[in-house]
Image (cartoon, rainbow, N blue to C red; front, side):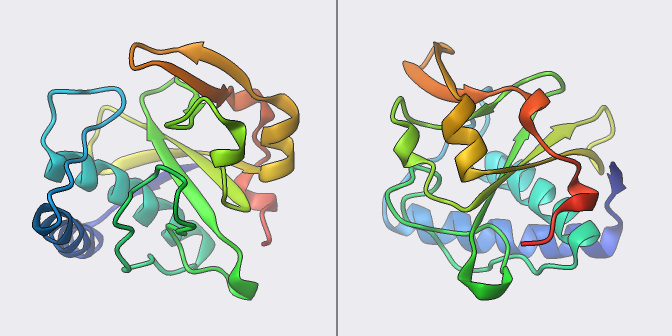
Length: 168
């Protein structure tokens, strides 16, 4: 599903990105994108939060404005969106054709209830939401591969269910 962000959406993205980045910098935490080691921490936040905002627009769930000091490392349970019944979701933005990759070789580090895969497009304000995956589907189908930063667990887009069917 293609989702276009508008100026008002991007203003919200900018606010959340600056807040997250500022708080992490105070703690001495640097965040670099998995696929682009040359981007700044703020640029990585902007990309990821833009994808979260795209998912928020089509699902109706709000962005989680809380700060996860450890990012996506799976060491703290953090949800990118605020879901009912304390369920959690991890939104991963990747370039088209890339996998849903954990920042770990341990599949148990996928601590969220759901994962959502979002592809970037040529337009920085447009995203393709591929679908969602449950933790159990991830655990049943993950593989391991070295993507250049050590062995990581991942699943391909074929295991994702249509986002239109998601009801956490």
